[in-house]
Length: 141
Image (cartoon, rainbow, N blue to C red; front, side, top):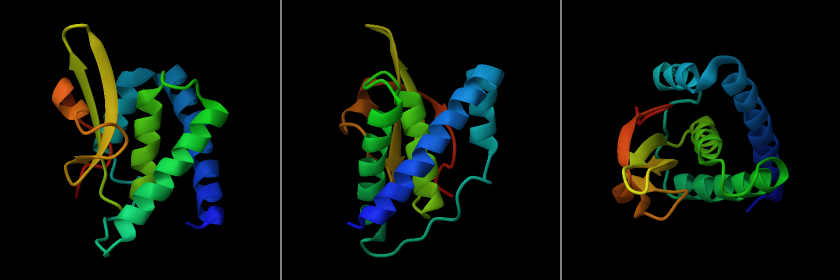
């Protein structure tokens, strides 16, 4: 894996984290979520090339883990992580869907990313544990 590529993804991820913090503080979750769910401006059309998607997912996951250690509190920021992962994958031409869900007992909310129906940033069982609220940014096009 190209370390320069991962370093570039880390830098972009940190910029996205900062932008999300500003947007959440200024506009709140609702307006940010509406923008992301209606926006096709972030990313580019998905490309399907053998092995490319998996390499992009692997590089993005590594970059997000590094950026999270540098910027966020571990384990407490699933929404910014999921949004940033989705944006980074879409910028690389990988079809990614942001999922946001809740469960009743114990009450909890969670956000995760799926590519072609496969959870890529959490255990696969997460999708069955939460009721999905809606698809957001950059759903498969």
